[in-house]
Every structure is written in C-alpha cells, then in structure tokens.
Length: 195
Image (cartoon, rainbow, N blue to C red; front, top):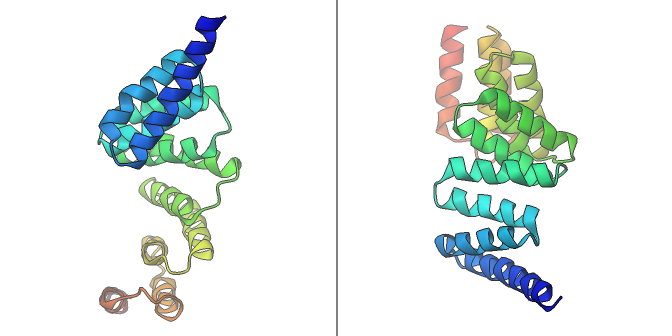
C-alpha cells in the first residue's frame, strides 16, 4: 500500500513539475516528466495532451499527433484535442482527417473562428464550395475582423464564377474590419478587371 501511495505521489509530482516546465517554455525538459506521469497512469489523458502540446512546440508534429490520438482514445469528448488534431492533419496535408477532427470538435461544442476558418480552408481545398462558404461565413460571424476569412469567402465566389459577390464580400470587409489593408484594393481591382 505504501508503494502505491508513493507511486501516486510521484505521478502527480511528474505531471505538475512537467506543467511548470512547460509554462516556463522548457518543453524539452517537460517531455520526460509527462512520459513518467503517463507510465504511472495518473492524469494520463491530460499528460498525453500536454505531451502533444510540448511536441508541437518542439516541432515534432507526428509525435504530437500520436499523443493527441491517445488523448481522445482515453477521453473521447476532449474537444481541444480534436481541434489540435485537426490542425496537425491539415498541416500534414490530410484534409479528410482534418475535416473529421474539426467536425468532431464542433460537435463537442468548440465554436471558434479558428476552427471554422480551418474547416473552410479544408473544404476549399476539397472543392466543396458550399461547405467552404458556410464555414467562412461562420468564422466571420464569430470574428468579423478575420481578414483571411473575408479573402477565403471572396475566393469561394471567384471559384463559382460569381465576381459580383466576390466584390461585395471584399467591399463588406472594407466596411466591417479595421484590419483591411491595401491588398483588398488590389484584389478588388483584379475582380473588377476579370468580371
């Protein structure tokens, strides 16, 4: 019984010490402590998740993806892990898995402009204009200052050959966001020229 209590104490110690190191930006030093906490079995889904975060910081995205997958195996409703898996799948070019991960995060209650924008980008790559449009619009509802979403929505209309709506979209961006820069005017000039 004493061995078990010691083991439990050590796992907590590993996990919390790893979190301290992570917060200090000492990701490499945090990794073996997260692994030790996982080996001890305490805080396991969270240790896997935090290990994934540390691996992202260390640019070891494949290992991070494995850690996030293990997180959702242990805690299937962990929406943030699904969202971050979507990001990694997208960066790896696996649009289908990114879409599945982002949609699962949304099903679990994630409602962020980041997720809807990333999902829209996936649908844009997959040439699903309707779902790309829907998700760019949702990203803009959540964050009207998101200029990349305005451009994405205009691009959807361009792909559909509807330059009038592409123009209206960017005109709306000019009116609704403080972050619209000179690039908008160049893009508008292009749409005017080709329409």
